[in-house]
Image 1 (spheres, rainbow, N blue to C red):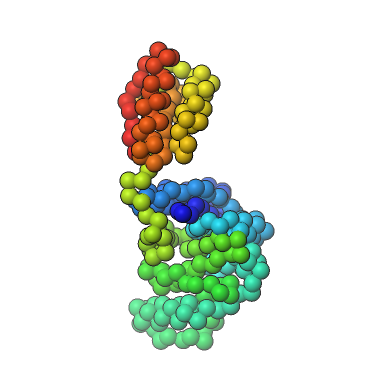
Image 2: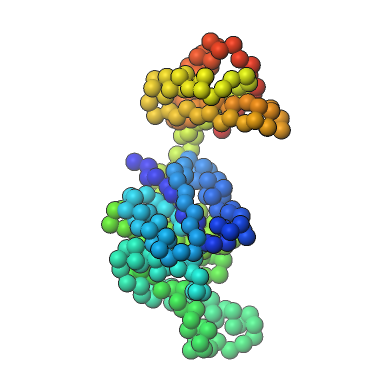
Length: 271
């Protein structure tokens, strides 16, 4: 059974508009390329109470979740601590994370032509980035070796924690998908087919939409109205999505049902 996938994006900079979220479109792209679907997403600012509550729901959900942001070691990074509270376990320095962080510090010192001083205060502080909830497994970071981590809750939810920086987060998410969820990859397992409809209201088409969903279990019918599209102006994109065979059958019935309304149509869209 294919798991449901969720995404959590953490940071005041997203909520304030200082930075625009790029994670959700990229995660959708990475998952779509593998025949997977993102089921839900949540945004949360740097509030420990809200982060903890959000992660607790994720751990209890039974879903596969990717969490982006807040795993550094500055005062506004709360995700590691909140993950521990949500799981009800203490934090501890992960031995492999410690080794990787120290390796990164040695690389940095060498690049700068300086001696490596592991006991220097700032280097000791950097080890906090490897302090994870007990029982966590690391997620390797190909960009700078500072790892993320993943934990599973009692409810079966598996949460993968990665940095907020896209250059780090995206390769880490892609590697986790390929390493742990390849058995669920389904190429060409999902079809979305729609038509542009002119001159109708959603309320008029609702009974037809309900009939199509009722007659085709597992298929979702959708309508996306627009009032100022640069190409098509006021219109409704009306369509279906689901397993290709079922979706094709539902779409044929949808087009047949539309004939009773004497409407004008634009192009058909297939995704």
